[in-house]
Length: 359
Ligand code: SF4
Image 1 (tube, rainbow, N blue to C red):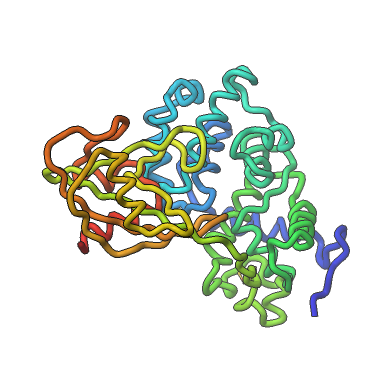
Image 2 (cartoon, protein in one colour; image 1 turned 120 degrees about the horizontal axis):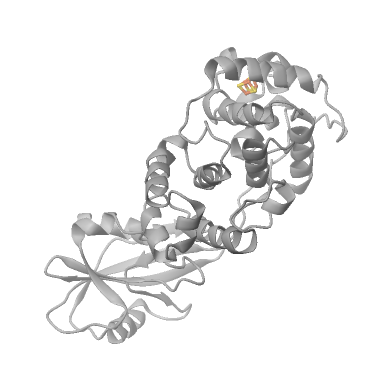
């Protein structure tokens, strides 16, 4: 049964945890391109990129962004489309949109200087409580706690939390633990250290408990619960939508269009498509889509793909249509087959690309 500590309690001195962790970080800490600086611009950029993504996937993108936009001002002056195109392949594109919005906001509202406190940073687009804490701690040495995915996992195990970690009760408890463990000195190193611990030792699968610097404090290890913690979150029920998509090929080039900047998947590229109404046949929607694009001729059905967003599940039904000469609807572009893998195509239609190879 879960032993709930009072919110303001730990069953070991927090200084001991910080000391074990910092000693280990001194020996094993990772050297990363955005670490040897206190400049909030690269720190913020890296933190946004690292949300939902691993260090290995982020490194090249980070270098590319710093080269193209060496300052916050340069990023603020770029167009949103330019930022999204450079982000292509990294996924979770709302981060790119928020990145641009924050650059503009800090430049115009804060005279180009990031605010120092986590509370103020949290007011900026795309900066949640944990990211705000990380920037505040890493760039400004402020006493601010973090609770990213790695730290969440470490704390769930350290305290053997036997509750789904995203429940509101667990959330409150995890933040309380994180705040209690965060020291008042060497906050920059501590923040990096606890992130590293989750990323390299207390990993989702097969954590390296034998090499863990805080292993002797870990309750999951004492109770032999490491393999089952954190507990799995119950998946929530979401509706399913269908979308008919046309892969229009003309001499090896394919028709794509950019979604409007504002709204769902804003600014990303996609194949022309249309959502199917609940009581509608696919053929009806396909005919509607062809008419919208000014196209005619037979279309061959390819394999369906499925993509899950946070609020709905999408079934994409792709059709291949060989187009002859003639114009198509405005706002579309023809792109070489090889280029389709490099543009910022949104996730569901990226999966559709695979059906092209098979079809
Ligand atoms: S002992 Fe194992 S489970 Fe506990 S914090 Fe360390 S790596 Fe994670």
